Length: 269
Image (cartoon, rainbow, N blue to C red):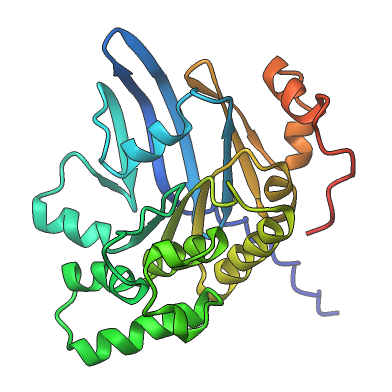
């Protein structure tokens, strides 16, 4: 009698690709150390929320990854490339693969929305003005702004429109990684919820990896796959919202279970 073939061995799960790897990074200003041997991994395709107390170094780490703030020690790799070892032309090529939304938008006040969105294109691409106009309008569509916003200056925009225009500029070169620094800061609850939903939709539609510095508990609950918490110059916990809620670390207990903590259970994602 013929024996049935043996069952196939289970296929091991593939480890997620690490697109940002931070190891033993030290950053300081004068005698004050802000980051003290910090380690962090960001996985391809995830929304990572980065939290910490005011002045603990959340934005400092972002700027160090972007090469805007020098570090005293450690290694930062993006897409497996050590950012300190890249020649200028390779560094420029790497910068095309990420987009940045700064906390206040950082739009140039003397340029229209259209011109602000086109700045990265002018720096990195060799394309006609007509094509730049078309691409910029497509980015406005992506972030939910009407085309009549293209000719307006930042002073003519609401806070929510500034955030969306700055996001359109961050998406100008079709990046793989999107850095967000306090994206819902200054928005009312309705505007913040709409912006969170926009980020979630863009992440899924465009396959983005999102690195989001935030203090907004609703954002952490609604759109983050994982959360990294910064305290005392190091990452003290990394995991899902449920894992961080269960942590016994004093700062995490105060943050997630304090008087202003969210009282509702996290919704299913």
